[in-house]
Image (cartoon, one colour):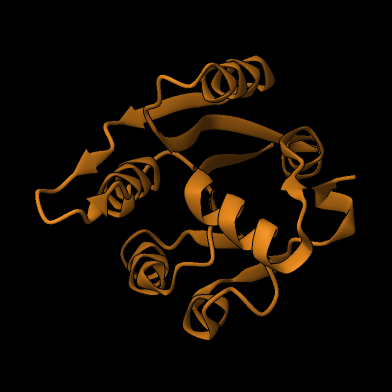
Length: 158
């Protein structure tokens, strides 16, 4: 059975689904699709910690599906800008998981991950699948992926 590691950039998928469709990503439908006939080595969903009860409930739902929710604090800078991305954490986890998984499944449209996809393919000889919103997924990431799966109707909450 093919072994997969799933890495979900929650912020990216949330904002791209909202921008393109004004809908939310359907994590249950995604899980059913991506895990069918496959064994999950690890499934991480990367989010920003929040005191909002709705966000905490969402994280609880993700855990119920099978994800480990990775949280990091939202940082408000003195100049008013904010930081709260998981790019480095996702990259480190993907490189570690590439040793034990046959396929790294990345849910993000962030073009910064094109180098990660290429490195996993070259160094580990593993495949990379990318789920991203059409028109909002970097072309460089689509081209780097072994398989690009567009987030469309079947992966949205209606």
